[in-house]
Length: 277
Length: 177
Image 1 (cartoon, rainbow over the protein chains, first blue to last red):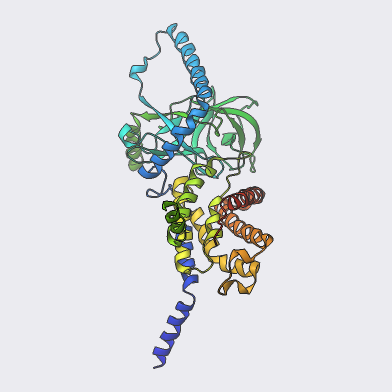
Image 2 (cartoon, rainbow over the protein chains, first blue to last red):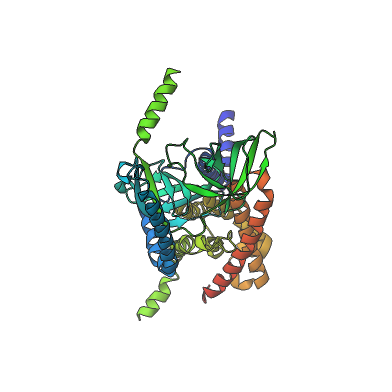
């Protein structure tokens, strides 16, 4: 009898506060989803690369893109000019490898969603699995590095931007061999941080920062930005460099997805080496 | 004739709120998520859903709707469940805020927004917005080293959202209520 009364009390307690319980339950669900994405990858199921969200966002971009066509044309023309110049200087050195033997494939894509105000920004592009885009491919713009592909659907993909506190890209000071990793502290969308550059490096404000050779995602020497200022970190062992990005992260339209054909082989090799140890 | 039919259609609360839900989500993800005023302000105008929702509610349903409107916006903007968290909390605290703004008699029969002053309504809206923004940005940053950035974001985005919501709510004010 007593047990029954106790049970009744518990049940009536739950019924009295059923809204609070529902709230706590749903809030906890949200919290788990959010916390997971703080430390691990973005959720595979709930992201904007899906068919429905992707089509809607690209329909919207299809309209709004017309408003800055002229500016975008100008930017692409500038890039063509730069590439032409490189091509001319290349002709004088016939020993350089021809682009046909390159280990990299390049796919062009358009940005359909670009956020840069959150601490964990993702860019959505209009190419996906059907265009051979897969996780962990590098994405660059005509001016510099944009990020790394995180999730793909048939027609769309989300890219973890360099403006993401989870982002960690291998980078170096151009023309030297000092490597570090590129991170973001969420304060300013035009400035990212390069950490772990050894103390012995000589730095100058205005030096170019480019991607390093340690990653199998990006080719070496893709520009990122210039040194804005630098200081030693807390234990005085390495530099933390503020890097001003070449990209205007607020205004990105055309991007290139880079696929390293040797990446699978490199990863395989690294894995087998690790296993031997 | 048809016009009259359309008018009576709007008195169906399910249809009306369903349409509001869809339109607010669209407006949020297509327009207001891309404003980037001063480089960081993206007003969250879907809070109007909670402002416009009928006073007498089925609370569990309202909680689910609050969660769901946030979650749909989250999927579009890759923010995990931050909007869902904010929407859910706004839905949960709304009765409390209403009692604070309109006094205890808001639960009585015959109470409508028409009986309230403009100040009361703006205070109601402001409190909804504050709760939404505080939850959203706190869980978005979740770090003590960013406390100034957090306050800056909450303050400026709230002000901008409030301005827009006051504008929108007077623009789409309904004659019959």
